[in-house]
Image 1: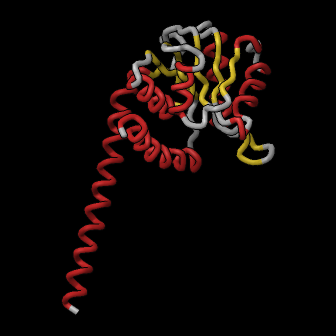
Image 2: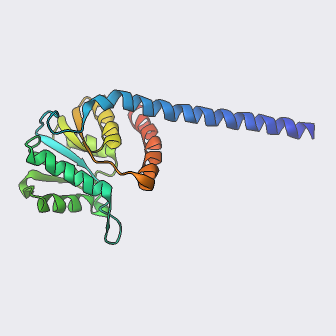
Image 3: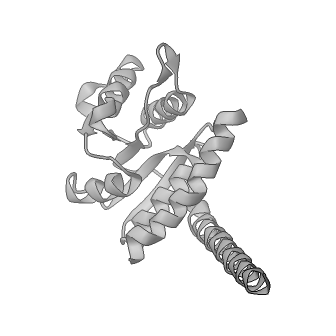
Length: 200
């Protein structure tokens, strides 16, 4: 019985240590990205510098049939505003082709007055890391404006600048409530993945 108790205590200690280390890792990765990339993001059109190109990061248009994903809608609005203000001249829509993300973004941008010749499609932007790298390798841009919600922009900017790219972000309106909370939780772990992509 005593042997079992000792083993159980050792297990609890090891498990507790693992949880603490995981929490510390998550905290560090999030703090590092926030503190590094936050200063490169903008909310207002009046202060953001101009760039030749904008990178519009993809997400699905619909949550379910005929229910539009607000993350998608707000990103479209931000990209249109940035283009019409003259802060960017072309928009690269990057996302997962299997969910029709680039196609849907292109259609909605054109519906809002962005001419088709100003829109380029990247249908292999399966992850934020891929979208950033392909902006350089496929389209030849080493200086551009990324367009998404603030937390997403921070992650993309961190990746881009660690790869030597001169990138800023224009923040789309964020989503609140349950959906925003769930997205925030996923983002905690996505930021840990950034460090794995960059340094492992």
